[in-house]
Image (cartoon, rainbow, N blue to C red; front, side, top):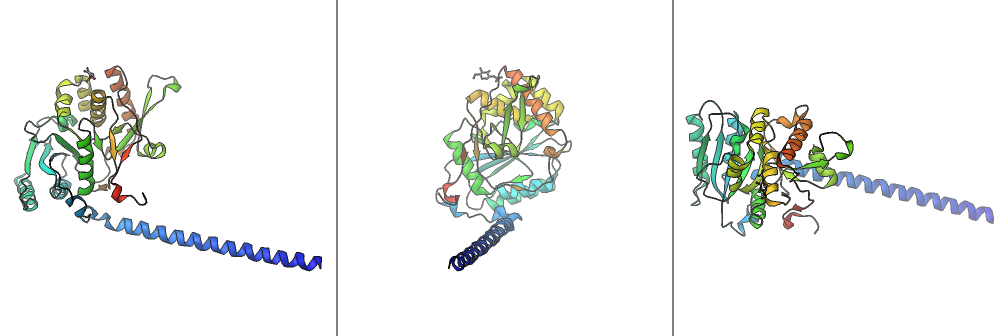
Length: 327
Ligand SMILES: *[C@@H]1O[C@H](CO)[C@@H](O)[C@H](O)[C@H]1NC(C)=O
């Protein structure tokens, strides 16, 4: 009797174990399939996907105020054409200012093309202005020189090799409108206080992975950010000239300098807005060797220049609640 019951119990348990095992495998397979599908669906619009975003998202509340697009470009007319063609279709855009620092002025064909694009995009009664800010000297400070006749207070500073869908741009613009002194952007970066090492350089600049790992940031880069136009004149006329000289000489860190400037003025952190980014150019300087060391050096140098560390860390991220999955 004992033996039989033991035996039967064992078979039952084995059967149960193998059943649980196959359920687990099936669950795992289902998960793999679902995530593969999600990844595929998410990937398909990567080619010009910024065009397919639902316009009805912002049609419900048309923006009352406009912003100026401040785009920095360097010998990449094809990227410039793509960028301008895209942003001209965003409803809140009031004007486009192209920071031009090449030795030759923009070609007639380029100007003609851009004007044509803007006209075809402003058929709904909008009038978008196009301006070139031609610089003799090639310096990264040019991007913040501040074109005199900005009609809007909001400036959307952007590099020519990244594109954000209009829905993301309009979301960032409305976040900026609630905090117009703050820098509001899509590309967060972090500085770490590393005094424990006991060396001279106290601060370390950290990239995207550190932001992702810690959920914390203290800068948003001016390659994709909104800020008030007053910061352009502060950058050019009030910021310590040694910082501008460093930026010109080393061709780097103008974005960190802008983050310091705004943080010093506000005493507050910037705001990171969730946005879908499409990189249309080849990778920029951030892929070159020694990038982090150079950026860390800037952070330490600028902190010394201010006599303190103005950057403030935060972990707040703004997003459109309609686009969140669950809540
Ligand atoms: C930093 O902010 C303070 C207080 O607003 C201001 O007095 C000072 O000039 C600013 N420093 C720089 C370098 O801009």
